[in-house]
Length: 412
View (cartoon, rainbow, N blue to C red):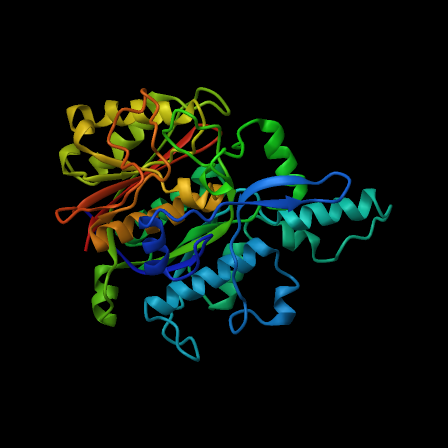
């Protein structure tokens, strides 16, 4: 069975803010952080639906250090700081953070702004002299590296770059490392920032981004809805402190939730099209890993991005994984409000799932007034609901490339 693994701290840089309980309340209130913003140059720019995150590095990252960090790494360090602080591990001299703590972080792209700046220097300024820090700014492992350096963490520092499943896999592998005794504590999560115009243009050409809804920009991400048109890109970071029970008890820390199961599968099917069987296997294998009957799960935080094909596939996968119990499950997609954070999506949604268990309240799928007939499960439309008996929940993350990751949590 291995050791029990608890979440003892959550740190966020999210479109809804940085205070976990306040973020959760905004989600339960159905508040969307999505808006229409102008991006790019006057000649080539466009209006984009986005869910940006606001944050401050003051008191956390020295100004001289921030110049060597892309926005994605800055977000990661700020989220990690908040997670350590809430876990009771940060003091003025940082002495309370065990030096053997690991860092397991997900990041889909790395320093996207640094990539754009380097190419602009070359093609527009006709110069072979980009910033000397360009390579360190671009590296996908920069978020994990900066967290490790900032807090003198000498355990494993690992980066998982698996598109939309990056941070869910990072949390799952961190969970296994703590459960199996390789480390006692880990900072796990993910960060992503793709809001520079070159990257946005590439996403637009892929044809998966949402159109502005007639009701307004805020309601344009509509998972499970008949009129859904695609997803809205968000940005941010989420960090979780994972600890074995002995470490948590020794510190007198209070858990938010317990991680009890993880699975990762591959569709081996198509680079961008999801497959029901692979997603269902991920959920079934996670249940096996957690030694849990399907009927014990009360809530699924769905990957559901609001693409026309993807939501239907996930609904079919839930039916396949849970059988008759699928009809009694609460299934919601909070991407309807915070957008899709790509490499950070799994970490943010795992944190939301942990908070749903902690508060025994299920956040809604916002704007779901006209469901797709194919999405015929209880998708918690529009309004949050109290769940006084909620004990177990599941969080899905599915990625381009066919990787499927499922995490299972228990109320602590």
